[in-house]
Length: 606
Image 1 (cartoon, rainbow, N blue to C red):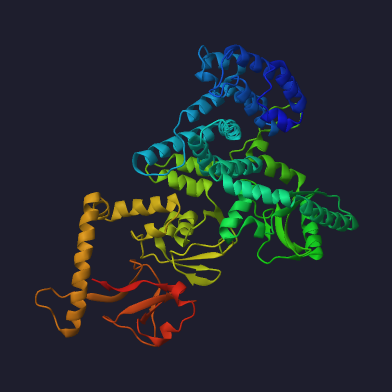
Image 2: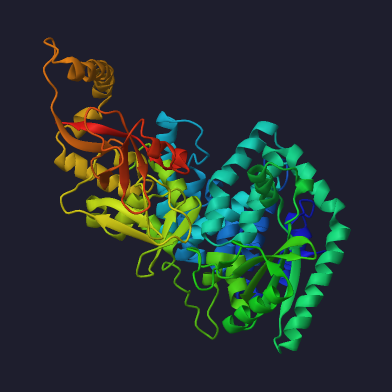
């Protein structure tokens, strides 16, 4: 029996055989064997005769959860907590008894796991009370995670085993569990650097949420298995030969990308799975960082690299600690992705945060501190924010969503959620810089404050001591910090802000805006033909508002010299911020990429 068969098998009910096989597959727990065996016997005693809703013995699921944790080489307290993760729901079991027999850490972990189990955590498909309840549930999960990350590791194992064993449930339940997995647990596993769990959550979620596509991809991958095998074997031999000539010892493994990754490529490129070619990958393990870069050079010497497909996560690790070199080359007419890393980097890549909980070598059983990972700093900040209906989405966007990496002019690395703007960047640097921003440059070129930043850009913030936040910035801000700081400044300094944002005021503002638009049209006509006696004159400062904000660098075009009340248009120039033209200016109409570079501008009223 293989390790995987042991973990997945639901038919084995011989309890002595199960625990014996566990220690055979995971011999690293030899020193803690008596402690784990005692926990197993305690579980059997307390759950004797109990079955799950599927009719299987109660103890099978805890054993599978413990085995998932053992595959990540977690400490013995985590293994015991995996066996006990739901034991508090069993009659005649108290937390005091658990703590007395198995220690405070085990008691703390299973208490935290029990609390998370009781929370209504699911993907948010609506607003109002449901979203608010989910936000509070997520918050409580964060508290448990910041207290001891093993609570989440046990819970991830529990959810993964449930997803693996959904066959006996109805379609509605399967889809609900699948969406929860892709919305919460897969991104969380990714942020914790646990790539194996993340990939399996995604693949199984696709299997139950979109079974037709899953079956299609599975069939295509199976059809091309023989073709893929020969192609990859040839590539492996060429890399190994080049490394041998360079005197470098390496190990190379090949794999097909997991199904969900293929599915995402199909969606982004609007292609069938059979039309995709870059579904193959090689992983090269070296002994040192220097050898990684040498192998990269050898690979690029063997095959032509694809432009824009190289990523150096060794020099610039991901926020979850992941390190590796990624490159895609054209190998014998097909794209081939190659990852190059050291053995230690591979251990972290496979197990992520779980790898930090291994015992240190030697007699000490002190655990490695994992709280220096950026995810824990984010969690501490997020958990202290006030719970509101935006919390759930902000949590997902910032902690579980995709991220980009940008640089300050000094070369400092700033990580931001995908879609972040210069306003988010400025507030991430410092709140005072955020409050004084009037413009920004990306790689030396002026960009609008509302433009999403791109990966690896060098961002320079332009400030003005006379400026301040405006309500329009809330449309551009992506991060919770920026939005929170903007709201705080407006609440403290704009007497009308709270009033304008009440529900009643919103209705009034909408009506007023309609009236103002009508009056504006009349006033424009009146300005040309004379003052309308029924309306007081409107005074204009001669200044221009951009996207409902005055805080932009603006210059008036010399070619058409726009003046009030000319109809005006604006665009983002290469070096002078926002340039304003008359709407009928021929020079303006000939500007390249005008549609992408134009912005809304209007004359400012006093």
